[in-house]
Image 1: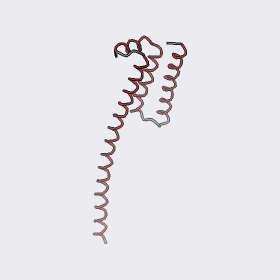
Image 2: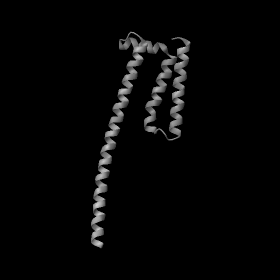
Image 3: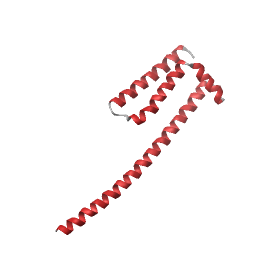
Image 4: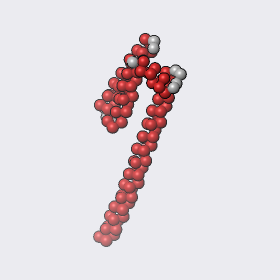
Length: 118
């Protein structure tokens, strides 16, 4: 790997790690989600330093070029992120539905007791 690409990969991974720490510190990103992004930054850092590992993974996967391997795992990562957030959205939707139903029952109860008091 040319030195310029190696420096770019390492710089981007360190920048990503710093950004993640800063987002968690400012409470813009929850800790439960930060581990996945931290892992991504560390993997980019390791592959930037240890190019032979990327070549080994490329041969293991059966790809011709290391860039093909990176694109494959990048797309796979995005699919996993989408699946994870779809599960989270589904869970939140169910929770909102239950909360709305409970609120409707409480509102009905309060309204009935107001009528009895009048």
